[in-house]
Image (cartoon, rainbow over all chains, first blue to last red; front, side, top):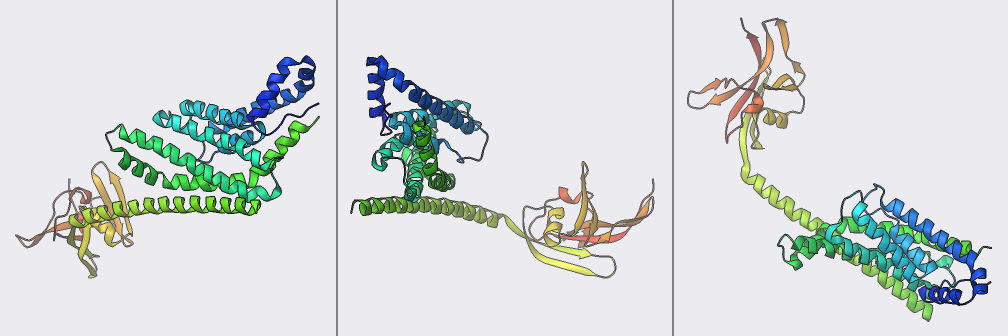
Length: 209
Length: 156
């Protein structure tokens, strides 16, 4: 039995291709693939469910789950999960239709999942206990990038009312500063406390026979 | 060496996020300050001085001279000088039933003692009953009004 690599989409894709060439290999790999698929489905459903709940603005778990999915399943899966959840959220969010901000939310959350996969490449086998602070800083950084991106989206929305883009960008960044600060702190705490045990637990679950 | 560089990288990343977030937050609070300052300046230009007398009907009188208000009614001006006011709102306007613990009293169905308000007519030099509820008259600069606790009686 060959364990599926955690080192990103490249490894996952190669494995999937090999599965198609060899029935024997495919049968050996099937239980593991089923488990991966099941875990991925549960994560997606959980993430979507939380995202569509009426909750305080920016108190979210999508970044964490996209990032962790990226770390365990690879960049493509992490990014896909983030993109899918934000796409659905853009239409069904309790805060209403996201409008012109939607593409920016999709790009932002997709990037977080993507970076999760890239980060897994430098941490190798799961995350060390000492990685809590590293995860908190990374969570804060990625959240800040996400918020800047969505504020650019808000600025684009403002420009539709005739405001010059530079003025609209400053207005969007300044008016969104407090929610962004809350978001950054929220995700720094969440990534710092939950991401290490979550990723390690997911690795253990996938390795279990 | 590799670990040190990585640690330094994460420290730099953390400091970058901290500095940018605090800068934006400061900009946000500065924008609130500018907005509040503009509102203050606008209100300042609207502010007027009025004089209000509370006459408790037992010889005690309290003047609140040069009370600063902004487009307020007689009733709102009363609330700016004392918070101890009992009142009821109705379709006819606000009815004040007590000021500073001094309650209106109905001695008979048609008479008693109550708080009534008057406006100082500078032309005739008399306190004048404007025959309207205290929340229906907006005071003008240097207006003087009195809230007087006095006897009343009326007949059908």
